[in-house]
Image 1 (spheres, rainbow, N blue to C red):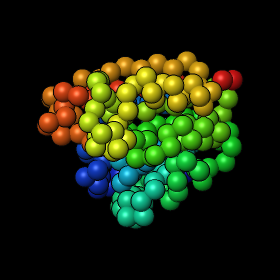
Image 2 (cartoon, rainbow, N blue to C red):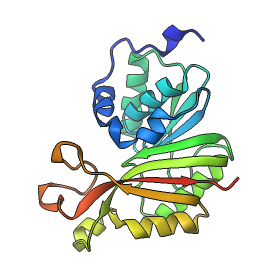
Image 3 (spheres, one colour):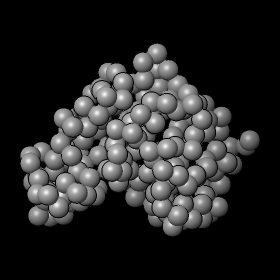
Image 4 (cartoon, one colour):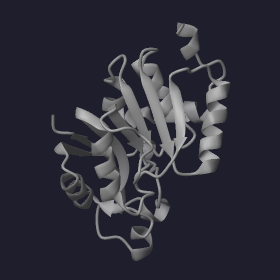
Length: 210
């Protein structure tokens, strides 16, 4: 595979947006090993998958899993527009990942897990597909205080709840870091100006026991 295979000829707009927001996933996007296999949960249009593909190099591999057919179609169009040869996108449920056991080095997700109604099962699946010692690095919007019911229904949980789910799925070394939104703006599901004082983005990292 040549280096040209990884060159983006005309970056899709989504990649430019991801570059602007990549500060939210620094451990995942700056410390990926060359040759690593990465899984992007809730990969959307593929922006973070493409950033990860650049980080792992031509010997690495990135798999994006998305639940929405329209998003998969857009991601594949973006892939054609680019010249990445180490990225693929799969339509599937986050609760039942179309990925082999113990095949992934690193899982990333940028506001992709809140869309699931069964997050504990998502984390169990993440554990299944990770290699021993593999790591999970996600950014999600969490509640900083008790939220109205309509917001809870949109998937936003308290940080303690997410950490409990990770423990229930048997993850280790769970660390969480509340991250102030860049330029004072919140991103992610179930947030708007009225809710910005009730929610915050959090970087959550966990490791599958070796």
